Image (spheres, helix red, strand yellow):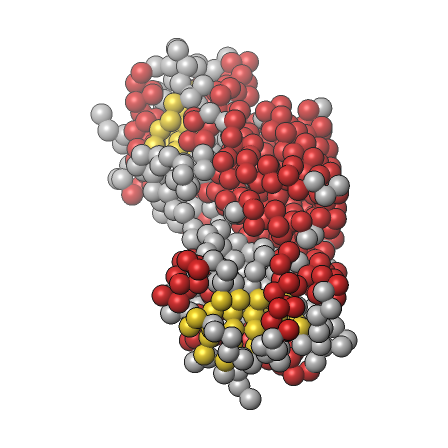
Length: 295
Length: 295
């Protein structure tokens, strides 16, 4: 029972990339998007065919977090597939919304591929976007084993590594490793707005790297943060306190306090899988850029 | 009058990289370092010959900021060269120290190449480290025109672009585009120290980029920050305030406040030369990595 027919609802960057990956494995892919332009572009890119209500083996819901549950309810109502998953970067909220809407939670396997780009939309899609990346899955005790197998098959076809995790644990984790860092990158980038051209002319690769993700779409990120407010706030509070303390130490010439933060930074950085000193995640094609920061 | 003989005092990453660049242009390079092991390694890498007190056309002082003025005074006392420069990443402090030590400020052209790597020491040196990068020079009204020409020649031989800037303006600029972002990267990395392995396993390239420079040597960075405490503190205070406000907005569910920060981040990021929407610095071989951040 290989995955033969899939439906991708939402042909943005992630949905179209999944569709392209599945097409490359010979899966028949149907596409649907409320934005007719995005759906047509995805079809023209070879991601699949227009969906006219066909039944499929698996439906992937690749829409913004706040509307995942709504789409799931619609699809389940028409009995589109025996298995459903989503790609929202928060998990507790969509699951709670699905419960509220009376969705069948046995056929729904909440998911989150840990991959993306600053650019959005189907034109930015790549079949290998998920290659070697982690893909979080949050099955529940009542999850149907067949549905879970189907979704794992999809993850595998995308070249990603499935990581099973509790929804709340997932949201705390991405607050720490993704959502809060994004807000911090935005704050560093925002601090540049008032800099003069001479200052910006001295910018190096270090600054480019620190601020790169700050170029992401503010409205997409607003939706992501809206679904994970308290965990992200907790991480930001700790970072803000560390920075305020570092500023205060610098003001008073207490370099020891700042050096301690720098040391903790080295230790924390080493915990990232694949970084110097950190564990390497199995099967992960982690690319470590050659170091080259200005100071 | 081409640069024929140069002395590099301090054979760490920067000094050895300059030496390699000069050697590639046929300059006779002498090397000196209080660390005999570093000096020997630099010589073995082909960066130049051991210095036995020979006179040279130009002496480059590539030692930590707090000891630049001391080395300058020593070299000037033995009349080593008609022109001197340094590479310290802060400029006001070394100049003030040189004045205090009674150095000849007409032959000293304070400098700072905006390039580096996380790795330090001569083994990490590369002849092309400065290619296409900015190299700040802080000549003063009394600076000798010949000395300035010599230093500009060195910058040109390294493939870098000389940017003339006032020392105070330089220090404020690097606080904004380099020193404060480094501390922020350290704070983000430090926040990971308490994360569990599952969380770290979900880390993506976005986090790697934001924290990459946090791997830098804490003692080197302590010395850099010690020479630029007030400007760095000012930038950190603004960033800490933005993050505390974002956390507070998230706690209360006010997504507008956070979205405003995200928008300011997009605008600030676009001001970085070579980034999307930003001006491109002439002659700069700016490499923009393909975007690919997780969320």
